[in-house]
Length: 486
Image (cartoon, rainbow, N blue to C red):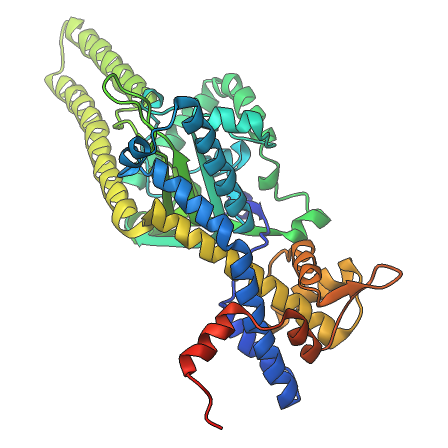
């Protein structure tokens, strides 16, 4: 692939710590020299998790109780039992969404912006059909009211109908012959050459340049300090492939960045027979950015694109005009007529069969998204999110305390930098560490404080365990062990 055709996507580095909690705790414990301190550290880690879990228990319980009223499967029956007025139900809906968005934020999920969606959809991967949402089947009041009462910046244009949360990034690659896609690429390049020769390219270039100007994160020429905090992902696409006999006849590998986790929230529109109150929460994994349409709710069945119809009709008109012109000649060549008809039929067949192949691919992707890529929905997704929040909070607190314990007093910036360094050096991972959230919890626990000039410092391990005291979980474990034998 030519360097000038290199397609790089840049995304902001996230705050999620991509390390399993047991691995994190044991790695940090092994860095402690004294056995007594190591034992106290492991005890502190357990106490921290017990306390943080208890802090969130009531909030999560409220979230699950509220969702039981808006579960698309059983929620309507539960609402009937509660005998609530329409105004009360509306308020409970907003309370549920408030809790849900708080959990999403704590679990480091971000609302997908218009810019991210434009970047994602600026290329094609496995899905080659235009997918649109049937907006008439989606409710437009629920989310509109929520964002009116809880304003958010940079919301996507569809935020009144559905919302897409994303977290984590990765890479997906596929190796195949892609014969039909290569044919499309050759035709597209030929079409671009025709536009250039006929100077029609100038008419379309204005629209293209205005679209590219809205895509600052795909500029490979300007590298700023901010980009050091971003993740770079390269797209390898058939459109940018070098034309050669080897590439056209052999297998090639294409590559696309993925969103590691996607959660879609929406409600169906009311019908003549039913007033919809169910709120759908669907959880997907490893979704290629260019194929993000497969997670959209209430998708319309794809049809031939306007460009397909233009090409189809234009080819038919040109073919018929040429055919009529040949027939009007005094000595019409039958072979010329056969060639024209064959070319016209062949091109129309190509459009038809390409569409059929794309439809088959689309059906396979939808099936895969339902069975392989959909992790869970509804209550299962909420339980997963609640556990995510606890795991992330525990890891943030443990890392921050460990740095203060090992390296002494630190400013907020120093602590942030040292935590990120530790994660990079010991685990080979990079993240944008959320130091503010971590120290806030450490201060709430009473095991970290600030000196006169604002530097953070921690108490000793043994003292930290004494301050937290005996947790309910520890009392339960002690009771399970039975009375001690003297």
